[in-house]
Length: 185
Image (cartoon, rainbow, N blue to C red; front, side, top):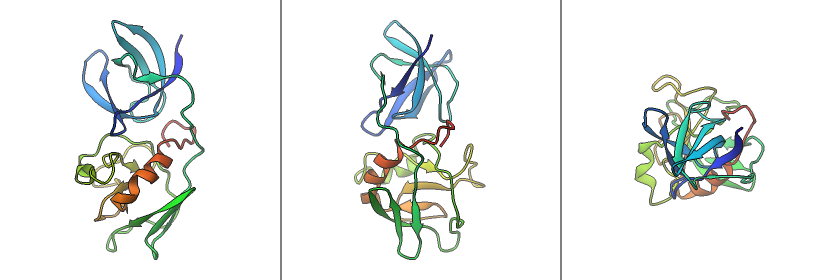
């Protein structure tokens, strides 16, 4: 019988886990919901119930999965005011831009759970420990070069919604707990 838990991330918001049975190490975002199946030899065995690794078997050192509700919220509600360069969200706002030559389409975009640590955010780690956590703006998985618009920290945009790095932590803390209930956003 499985027990509902959630992942506890490291200081950067990511938890390294091992895919079973291959042992390949991947990272999942903090607060990701999982079904804890069993514990053995100092490891917890589980399956994520949401996110890009949903349904796959993994293990992690005991102590990295917690019981309870970390404070999940309803789906994210953001309003991007391109003219003012501001992204408004419940409880605050962040400075943001998009590319003038390749702007993000006007309209509503689902905000997916983080998929993997994005190394391009490393340059902004001094501004936010969560700079490598990006949120895909779409359904399913991003397709690099075709459909890969994200909400992320940075100073240059190629078509994503790019948030001022100094404002990222506050926005990240809001988004990371937002859930629609569909397992991906």
